[in-house]
Image (cartoon, rainbow, N blue to C red; front, side):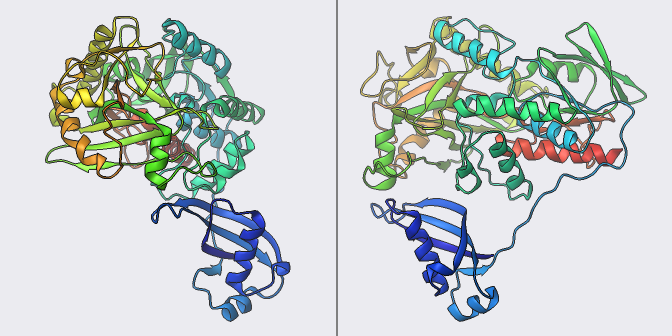
Length: 525
């Protein structure tokens, strides 16, 4: 196969044009191309409004590939070479089946790798299955009635299920391609295999995670829902069992702990068991909403219905903090993401078609352990809870979220209603002054950074743009300390994994870390 990079085409191009440009690059007839597959696709809007779709493709051709490359002299073409991941074989089956705690991206892919390796993992998920979870979440958004067991944070698929389903990551890892292939096998669209910024969408993810579960079961694994770990049994520094729901004990020696960033009660259980934890940097802030049409016009120079809804990624380094956008959801919605009673949390979500009227993103301020209220390893977690409780009170004690227009926030006056941008958060917002919800550490940094971010994205600080608070769950404020073997430094047999353990920051990076811990578990045998 020959790989050709940087084929730039107008948004309205056809597949025939792509094949023609590939042939032109190689100076051959299109009839000599036997097969063309897309390796990567991205949008180049640097010369707006002359936006291009840029491809990397692999082509199979009639003739000698090296000879064709030499004759064409195209510097953008070379012999295709890729790194392919293969699930390792396990040399020894343990006497007790391995256990995976948590069925988010890290736990799901850890369990899948263990199942493919023939180890028949047992998965324990504190929340419900995807269908039950979806019903509970919809009920919460419609009525404000929260189920603390099944919600946006807990249940099959983890917090990533109710998000945009973004699968891009800054990590370069050979496992990425394999993970994307498993998503496609489970029902995701094939374009995630080559889009530079792949996403699945919440509506599709709800079925994908169920299909991944069925595959794990078909390979000999077992998945138990509503099974929360409430304690750890230890003997001579080694894990010997887990307590489930405060009533049942399961004997085990190897556990991948993929609990997610919101399993605060489990963090407490770990601390009480003497398992080493440490505070880690994380970020908190708000969700910011704009009309998607404004983002499209700013990013593309002009609205073009052929182009996908535009996204953005902004960052501003201040003297002490960094303000940045995260988990940007084109055509999406700001959603209620609480998992505990009496606390308000926001998150962003979009469906596969991204056809919502608004765009939203987390607008976050970096926070370091020195900023935390105390030196307790769980101090960041307690700070999150304090802010979420303040938001609940200001919002009206009914899970409505505090909100403020950007113009009012910058002017230091409370908002009394929406302008041209209607907030999408359900069950609703309460207009207020966000300075009464968020600490000055956060509001001060946001106020300083917002006008500067507008220079990078025109319209970002439009007066009617909406800030909804708080965004507290961008990542875990706690790290479960592990050594080079990926095991807890305080408990042999426990493999902390993913976002909740403090070693990942998104669906893809969590899935990678889950696989790494599954490999480490097998190596420990």
